[in-house]
Image (cartoon, rainbow, N blue to C red; front, side, top):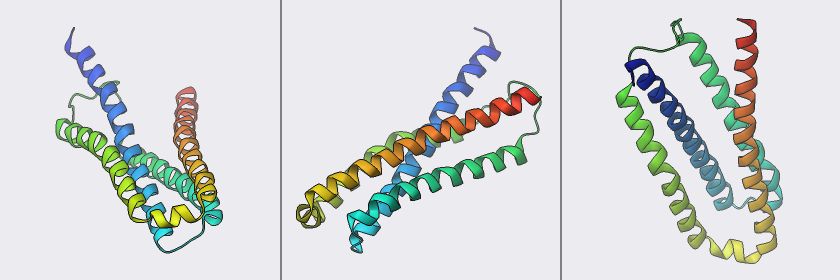
Length: 158
């Protein structure tokens, strides 16, 4: 395998790791909003709508930020960049591997600490839990589809 193919494979892996790391950060932020809103006593009926909206807003803001960053820094015209960002790749890999399990662990600890809130209205909590994860899933996939549509349109005009 020649150097160009190896570099292409590394960039593909980098893309997967980058998307996973960004998704882990956004999932962590969504859970943080959930922890904060529950701890101040906002009801599940309000959270059913608030958290999916916050999640979608977080993902859309991230997309807009990344598109702006790509537009400002992309000055290369070749298909392959000559330098591979090893340090950035390592940081993103660690972030992608560590942050998601850490978020789930913190979520479990929070659930134990605030179990009295969840036991009062278990059906409301289950409905909210479904809405929250549906919002996260919709935000994840709509982000990928939106980015694909933007770059396919850009590819067709070039």
